[in-house]
Image (cartoon, rainbow, N blue to C red; front, side, top):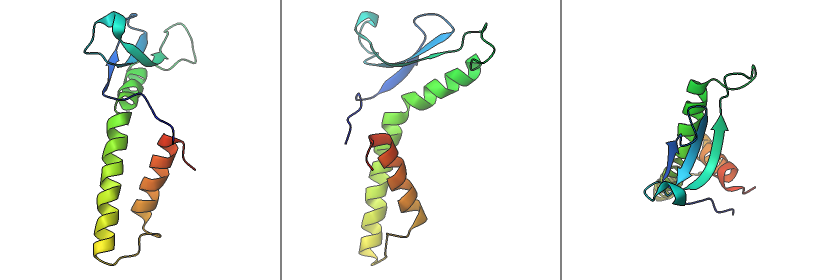
Amino acid sequence: MSKHTPGPWTVEDPMGPHIISIIARSERPVYEWLHVAQLSSEPHEADDIPFHEAEANARLIAAAPDLLAALQDTLRMLEAAHRELGMFTAHNKRIIAARAAIAKATGES
C-alpha cells in the first residue's frame, strides 16, 4: 500500500492567481510549506482549465486525505454491521464501490 503525504491539505495561491497549490503543513511559515501538487490555469492557453474549474479541482484534491479516511472508516462500520446481521458483503454494490475507490486511492489492486 502506498503512503500519501499526511493531511490536512489546504489550497493556496502563493505564486499568483493562475497557479493554485495544494499544501501540506500550511500552519507553518510559507518557506516550510510542503507542496503536494500544483494546478495551472494560464489564461493565454486555449486548452487550459478555467480558473474556477482549477480551483474546484484543487479543493477536491485537498480534501482527498479526509475523504479517504472517512471512506475507510465508513467501510469498516458497514462491513461490521453486515457481519453482525449475518449478511453477505461480497456482492453489496456499496461495499464493492467503496473497496474499489480505496484501492484506487492507495494503489492497491
